[in-house]
Length: 153
Length: 164
Image (cartoon, rainbow over all chains, first blue to last red; front, side, top):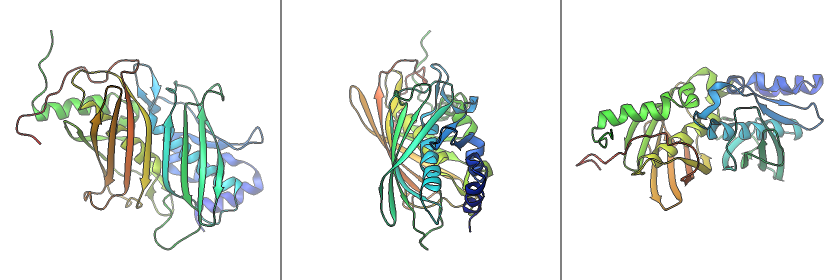
């Protein structure tokens, strides 16, 4: 079993979802972690200076918004679905709606369509005002294990 | 005083390294290295690091660093097409993850800006380990031109005579 799925089993007992991120080096480095304080699973990217893409505005780098939307989709799939493998991303399309200011970014995700092998997920990121998203994304994930390639997250 | 257009290849590379990696905090944090910049084309390298791993079991890079790199590389390809420096912003970016990156190996991104209209620039890109015919990821991004802010590139760039 992968370290991430072992961690998921622990987290299901303890309820401390933030610990899911500890098993992913990139999530730790980016300070991206899930939280469920409100009863809804959300993913937060804590603001830090290394996220900046435009020092003049200033604004958070678009690539980091895509990255955190992808992580939000993965945390959602791990937590909300009965996945037996780590979801493997196939593709993602990110729409940039507003420039993101230098504060925390929060994202939610929902499954648009659950297939046997493939899942379509929609994710949305915002800052202070949830009705004004800074970016949205649609992504496909393979959720059934195959021996073609190792799960890449 | 207005500086002359940049026609020296080495000087251009050094300036693109400065504009697109050194002074952009996230690109600098990723350690992006500019490999090439000519009219309509940009190339960058991302070295493998433990911090960028998505799956600790396989040590394969997460999708995020590739997304950020392809976003940056497509943006740089747009910048090489603009005669007059003007600010621009990404509208959307699609990434297909076609093969996991090999742990420990550097990833190279190559982006092409193949069309610029009055308001929109269109780009496509591939990420690979040195052989563009064996890609790790493919990307397509569009950019809105003439957005607010300040251009990252303060000088005009003309193609070097004789260069493709």
